[in-house]
Length: 308
Image (tube, rainbow, N blue to C red; front, side, top):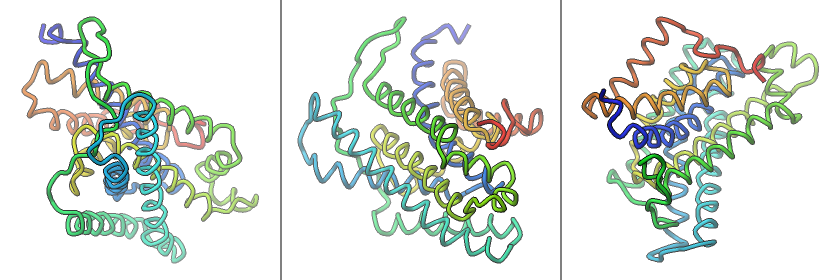
């Protein structure tokens, strides 16, 4: 009975959040596919992309109010800025926190500790350098209801997030399935030793995989910052939820990450109509526990190399 109240409104919000979770979750999935490790510093890559978009847009827009084609251009500029910073941070993270350990054949626990250490370093560095208060990104458009769907008000924010996310997700899927880079990623994910014997540069593929995941995470950070503001701690909760989405869909599977993100976003949103909103995070993390207990491999449950 509770789901009949504003069902479509909650569904639209859930899909918008789900697309953001999917973009972040792909960073976890890509890295896991090639390294069989969880990059726990990915939430700070997300945060870094938000700051990148913040500085660029606040500089070029200032106090102006863009409209029409200018709004589209500024959104693209913010995505490029967020994606560039996210990709750069991910690249540096791989070089500093992961590659030295691979060269020494370190145990997997060392990677985990290194990633957590890098995450805390970036978390505190951002708080020190950029302040500990939330800052709004200069809006590249005026947010408002564009149209209604079965009583649900579809706002500009939702359309921007959905449009950008769908475009980037389709591009990534085609990149992995059709390009030489994608072949290298799939080969390393399937069998790194054999791929190396066949001439695949393992270090290069891993580095490029980190960059791709960082670009997606940085762009998601910018989109999230447009709606909620930018703060040094913003990556923690979305990062954990995106990890939940990756596990839900089947970590290591690109399409699984997308499905997991959308499912998590919708379940979270719909639960608000039945349960107090303060329980939203509890529900999200409860889903993670249930999935790990019932189906540890997730909905699709295949590695990257087998799914592409």
